[in-house]
Length: 204
Image 1 (cartoon, rainbow, N blue to C red):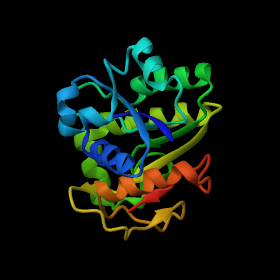
Image 2 (spheres, one colour):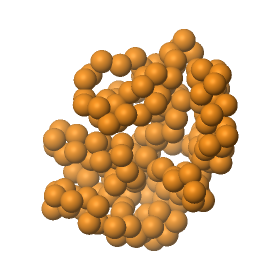
Image 3 (spheres, rainbow, N blue to C red):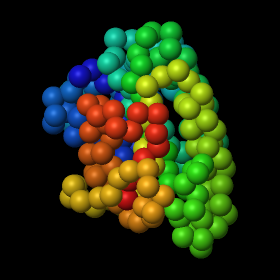
């Protein structure tokens, strides 16, 4: 499958990229700094630029079968999640690419109660702006006419891929720790699975 990937140089994005290539997918990635892809540069079709540049986003998405969006922000910078999603949605709708898998976070939207109260307060105090941007990102995606799935992981770690995690829309799934490698595994399974079409499953 030909995949347009946004966020390929982030923690989870690198795992998605590596696993997708191992599975034989054809990846086009929009990146600001190709050097951050390291040894994977030769295996990927690179579009160098910024996600806020509509022409660069169009170039990344044109001809794709699906889009994976894993935009992330540093807490001391302006959140990019919602602003960066706007040109992605615009390009997909104009270019006729329908399948979108986006990664946000547990604690966003109607999943707030799936976080323990102390952690919910901690996130509000430390990354409240980022969480608001993810809320807006989800709203934009839900209001699109695309075939979307929003993946909401719990607390991310750099542990190995285990294949042992809970995923689904049941609100009893709590925001436990999960490796980025396992999140990548779940994200890629959505390419061939429509169980969570127009839904926002937790993965933890």
